[in-house]
Image (cartoon, rainbow, N blue to C red; front, side, top):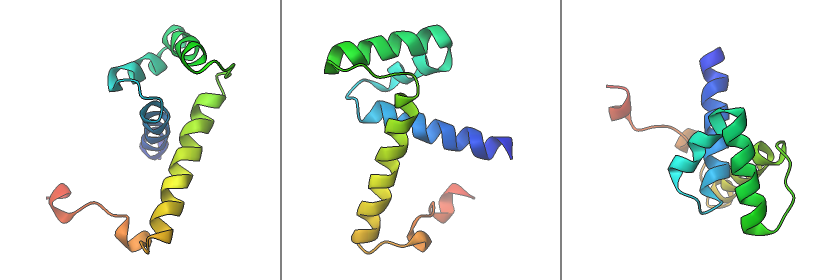
Length: 89
């Protein structure tokens, strides 16, 4: 069960980083307290905001919810939200 939550948290973190315009390697900063603090300082400076540590995962969750809403409006269902068979073979 722990892997399920780790995958979920990774997806949230990646969604947060993806919408910032920063390179993927910036996401590795989120794996340590010092790096996460530095990432937050960069984000606040870049966008002229004052985000807190809780705002980073909230940003990712918001992005993922918007993606799901877009997909649903495009006619996709949970049946479409699957990896192709070749990922399992």
